[in-house]
Length: 120
Image 1 (tube, rainbow, N blue to C red):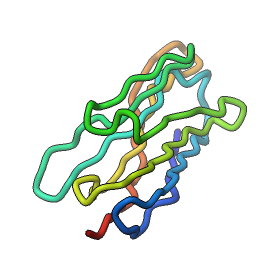
Image 2: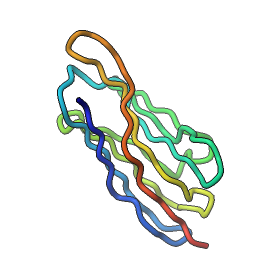
Image 3: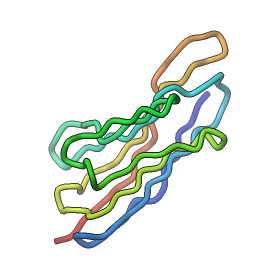
Image 4: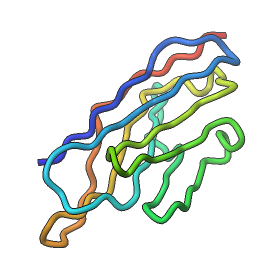
């Protein structure tokens, strides 16, 4: 069983910064893509940023230039550095990982979510 445990959410003022972390644990062969999604109040979950094991990253247009995703594969951890935060960044942020099992099966794992609130 694979677990993703997030940390780093909280309350911050407009223009502030937060850093989210997500660590994967359990039995698996490798982690392919790791990323962050968010779900604002009353809206659907959306991709924020993702990074592949090969180093490719992609970002939602609304966060480009403000957020940075990074990985520490030795620790099976992905980070999201969020700068210049805006009230519209307020959401529950979820970590996601494409996990490859020892038998080659690839499945998606999700964290429990961490609340980020940006006050105006």
